[in-house]
Length: 492
Image (cartoon, rainbow, N blue to C red; front, side, top):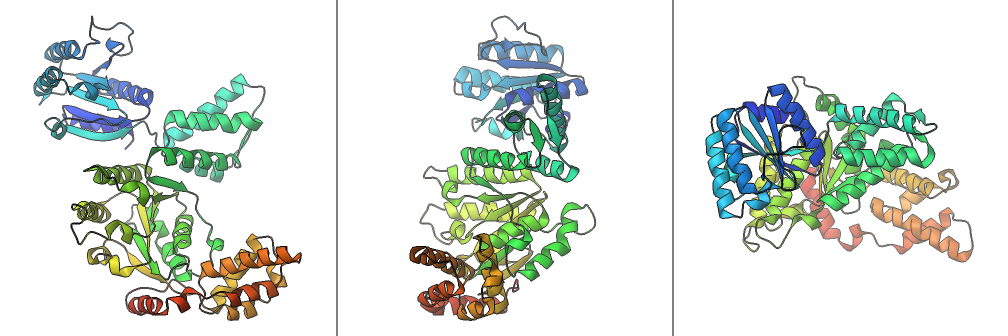
């Protein structure tokens, strides 16, 4: 459901109070006008500066900028006609006043059991404990894909009316990708980025998607604990064939409403540096959905209750953005303290919230979680139902190592055909993908310092100088590999 459908359903369900968290008040007000018209209700917008008004009229009720006066008038309006929809902007800020809070509760009691509904609108509506249980809470101001497409068409038409020319070259596939990229932004944010895309060169084409992704990443970096990422193409990673095959088998079920349930996610365990994080990115690429990373550094807070609230907001955002891939890197760090009370039980509550959401969610969200330390993972996280499957990222074999070398040489402008890849792969036995990448980078520095072209000799020298983790931490690596042998699927 889009926002208008959701608010209409709540009004029909006779909720006396709805709290709408939004960063786009104008959009929500417009949707409320449309919902009120569809329901045959009278809309009464209110703000501190303009007072209580009727519909879109400029004239307001006399001296209703005062919250207490407005509530008395609202009570009279409910008596006269029960089909009232009150849209109160930033009203929650006045509920700390005892008289206003009492009048508001009286109004809710009067509306209870009637079609009348009060909608509180704000960036983050905060309600007193005795009022919060009465409210339904939703997010608004975020258009669905149909509305985003309409906004793109509107922006193109408006630009063409106001400018000398605008060249549009947006094939259907690129347009679908643009719509998905803009999903999760408010109407005003969408208008801002579209204006930038069109004004910079009087063109609107597939190259503008990069600008949209950049804008979206900056917006999410400012707004919360979810970080927007692009997705990797399947060719960007060597190996992981079983993982790609597993995802491909379930891709159709993820998007369809057929008898098969959509896949929920995978847990990627393994040796450090063996491509788990990159595999999470590739998973989003294989599914063709945007990737967001849960930023653990922003999740935890020193204030009581704020950590749980941060997680709740993040999960609500994921539901709004669906279909989406949620990447939880080093998931064991969230739950490391869940077996103790050293943090006042915060980790236990976070674990409970996360496990319940993973089990019960119905949206099209896919979790790609990674872990380096199986000892810190709670057993309830590993059971079937939380994740569909557990994959183990082992040290790459010779063929995978040759593929990794090929990718990183080409990535840095070197021709892999000029290198003896089988010999280099043999020399890098026991190396992780990250260690092979660093050897290639070090070879570039070494050759540059000597004033030479980078060759296989430079890479071989760096491989010989490197002691891989499988040697330095041999016991730990062998323990992880032995644990996964009977419990996980090798992704290669």
